[in-house]
Length: 163
Length: 163
DNA sequence: AGAGCGTGGTTGAGCGTTCAAGTGACGCAC
DNA sequence: GTGCGTCACTTGAACGCTCAACCACGCTCT
Image (cartoon, rainbow over the protein chains, first blue to last red):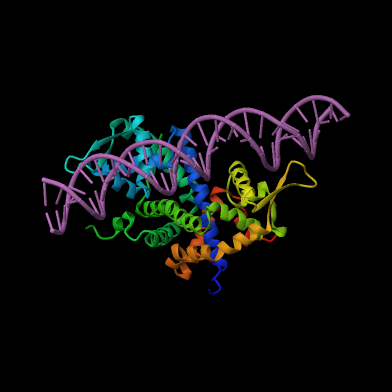
């Protein structure tokens, strides 16, 4: 049992900053979305990911991957959004195990109404603090971290090889 | 009502990466701490912040600031940790409104037992993916974002002016 | 065809977090 | 020194998330 390598000054700064961002940023965005339309950041993201998918639907597991969430969490949230008429669950025609989540027209309209305010908040709470170079660095560093946490995360395939 | 400025490719990459990190990284660290000792990342942080304070105690509001949490959330957690004998609440001698949270000897010992495994996890899940330059960049960028979210966050005073 | 295993998804219980309301204590005005 | 606003914190209820258990289907092997 050797002495652990404690964090040096820069490592500590990076880690503490990330930890703070981690609690403050979602809180700020959640707040904006909640006052704009009783929606959480996660709810928004679920709908946003569906809106970008071919045909505006995805199997639950793929949607879970795209929102970095567990299937369980997603299932609960989809039930909630379904009750509001924004989503619809349908059985997969070929494989009866899979359920697909479809973004309804009402859901799409809600998302479109929310989107401008949301991206504006993303800018004011976050991106506006950074230069173009910072944004580029952050994207690079962020993707390295994501890769470490989940080496075949969908994000990593987005920029790289298209199949 | 002008057309909102949507995110460009780099902005989108940075934002999506941060969003993913935000859910994956705490989950990974929570996991390690939970299996090592039934403690959440937030619990750990509360104790760590106290352990670094003069006399191993802090007023609730300062502890809340140092953990970027609401007073309410902190109060609930302190109650929980108090029941385990790791913390103790005491009234402030001069101002009866303030409560101070003290890290007990048992709490300190628990923290010290958990610390090596935790920093190891911080390294393997996060820092090991980065070069020294990345870490430095991340610290700089992270602090910019923190400043945007809370312009007198304690982190910002740590490196800068003493007093 | 049937057994066994892995996959995809749901559910409910338990716990943690948030939000709004409430409780004292301080401090300033007069 | 009385009133009133603010500050520091606590509490309880509602809501969200996590975890473990579960079900149904498909696939493979025999």
